[in-house]
Image 1 (cartoon, rainbow, N blue to C red):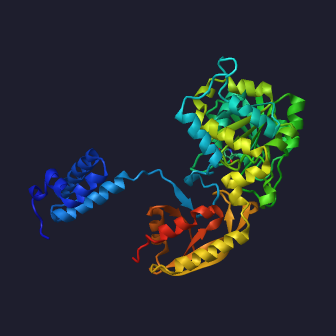
Image 2 (cartoon, rainbow, N blue to C red):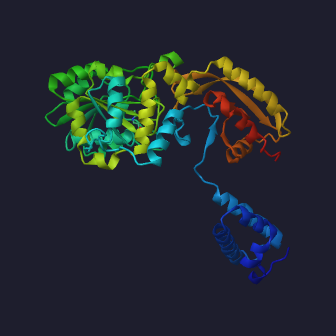
Image 3 (cartoon, protein in one colour):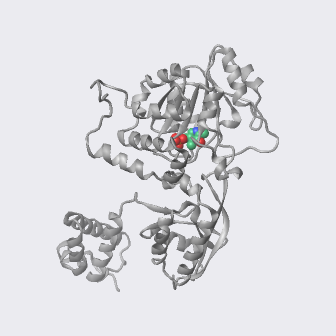
Length: 463
Ligand SMILES: *Cc1c(COP(=O)(O)O)cnc(C)c1O
C-alpha cells in the first residue's frame, strides 16, 4: 500500500456501519464502541503524522482491528486466573483463595445492611472487630485482638501506639524486605519509632538486646523471616530470651510471625512456621500476622495479645486509617469459624486443602491431563513429572512440597511465548518455565480447575 493523506481514513460513522462493528454494538455498550472508534482513529491520525508513509488499512481490516482493540481494552485487568506456578501463596496472584463459607459471608453482609458497629441486643454502638475477637481468643488464647488492613499496617500501628518517639530494639538479621521492594524497616520507621538494630546479619545474642536497652526503649521486636533463611554460622536470641528480658525490664515484646499459621504445618511437611498460640503462650505481649498467608483468609493484619497493649493499639488515631471493611471482617470471621474444627478447616480452607492433597492424587491427574494435552496439535510432548513446589515466592528449603507437574513442550519450541499465550488466554493460566518446558504444577491447582488448563491450552498458537 502506498501512503495516503489523512482524509482517506474512514469516518467514525462509516466505520460504525461496518459489519464487524455493527456486530460489536449489538453485544456491547454503544457508547463504549463509539468512544473506542474515536480514540482508535485519533491514535491512528497521530501515528500517521509522525510517520507519513504508514499505510492505511482498508475499511474492513480497520474495523476488525478496532473491534479487537476495543475487546482487549474492555477485558478487566483484574480477573480470575488458574495458578499453576506451584507457589501456593503468590502475592502477584492474590495470595490465598477464599473458602466458600467466607465468600457466602461476604455476599450476605455486603448485599444488605449489616450489624457492623451495633450490638444487636442493646442497640448500642459496638466495636466492628467484635465479630472476630471472640474467635481469635478461642483460637489463639489471646486476651484481646484487633484487625487492620494488612500485616504491614499491623506493624506500623503497633509501633506507633507503643513506641512513637522511642526506640524499638530489633535484630539486624531480621529486618527483611517483604517483596515488591517494600522493606519492613522503612514501614516501621513511618511509625515514628526509632529502630535500634542490634547484632550482625548472621548472629544476635540476648546480650545484644540487653546492652541496647535504655530509658528510651519502648519495645523488643522479633520478626519471623518467612521468605529467607540465614544458614551456617548463625545464632539468634530466642523468643524465650526476649520474653525473659522484657519481663525483667518491663518492656513489651512484639512478635511479628508473618505467616499466621493457626495449626501445625509440619503435618503438611512444612517445618518451622511459628504458631500464634505458641508465641502467646510463651509470653509474647503482642503477636502480629497476615490473614491471607497461611491462615488462608482475606487480606488483613491480625494483632493479638495482652489487653493493656491491644487497648492502646486499638485506640491510636491510625487505627481509623487502617481499619478493615465489613467484607473483610465477614470473610475473616467465616474462615476462623472453620478453624474451630481443624479437620473441617483442612477440608474447607482452599490453601490447606491444596497443601493436604496427596501426591498420588496429583500424579493421577497429571497422567490424565498429559494424555489430553498430547492430542493438541500445538503440543509436541506432554508428560507428568515429579518436582517440588514452594509455599511462598521467597522459597525456603524447609517449605518445599512434593508435587507432580504436567511438563509441556510446544511444537514451536518457544516456551516463553507459549507461557505468555496461556497467561493471555481465557481462562488465564500462570505456569512455570523450566528447562525449555512449561510446567503446570498441580499442587496449586484445584481438581475443579483441571479442565481450565485444557481450555487455555486449546488457545495456544503454533507460532
Ligand atoms: C508478609 C510479612 C509481612 C507483611 O504482611 P502483609 O500482610 O503483606 O502486609 C510482615 N512481616 C512479615 C514477617 C511477613 O512475612
